[in-house]
Amino acid sequence: MYRYGWTLALLALIAQPAAAQDSMDWMPWNRPGYVAPSYRAPPVNEDRMPPLEIDRGPAVLDGGPRPPIAPLPPELVDFISTYAPSTIVIDTTGRRLYLVQSPTTALVYPISVGREGFTWTGTETITRIADWPDWHPPAEMRARDRRLPEKMTGGVRNPLGAKAMYLGNTLYRIHGTDSERTIGQATSSGCFRMTNGHVVDLASRAGVGATVVVVNELPRGIVEAPTRRMRPRWSVGARD
Image (cartoon, rainbow, N blue to C red; front, side, top):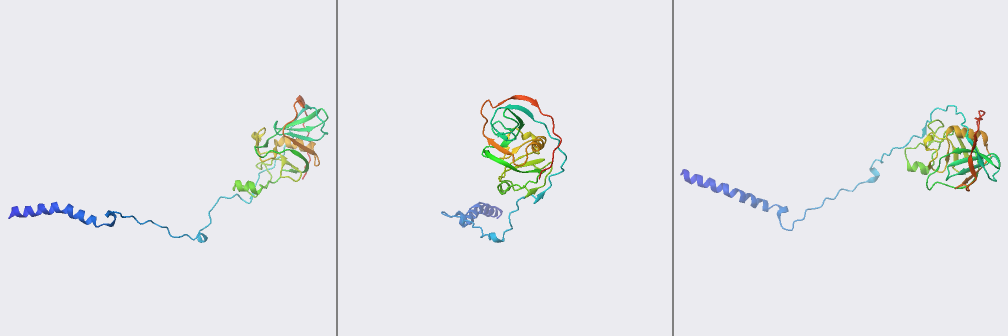
């Protein structure tokens, strides 16, 4: 009897895997030709979604303090030309600004010019000179960098520097800079940057109404070696 019981138990153990397999065959994903149903997300009502948060600059940004800036005297060079005295000539290739003194001499200042695609040539007139001017980034610039403010007040952190000389009715200026390491490079959006000391000196010599001629390159031989360094001019008046 005991032997008969052991036989039944052994048969039950052998039959279990087959039974389990038979039960798995009844699952739908084991049937031939079964295709799993695709998941479709419910529709989204975009009108009820919260707006995407994008970092924006403040409406007004403080440009910092406005310390007195001493004029930095430029060099006097031989400049053989037919430009009238007090004409400003800007050589974008040479990255130099010349203030004509006579038919044979000019004062020279190193500048930063527009980067590729932002250079221009032509003749304009200085229509306004401002001390520590406010900066209003144009809409296209703010579209490229949404962190820019609508306005930055004048100060040492303001990219327009200690003075700005506005050219005609354009958005271009001759101005100082809060980043003197860019002088001599092509980095601006069409304006001409000078050190704060140089722009203060230039504004003391060339006033509203001065002619500004922007050329791509000066004729060869028009500029010779420097003759002497000018003495500093300390009587700098504010013009707004």
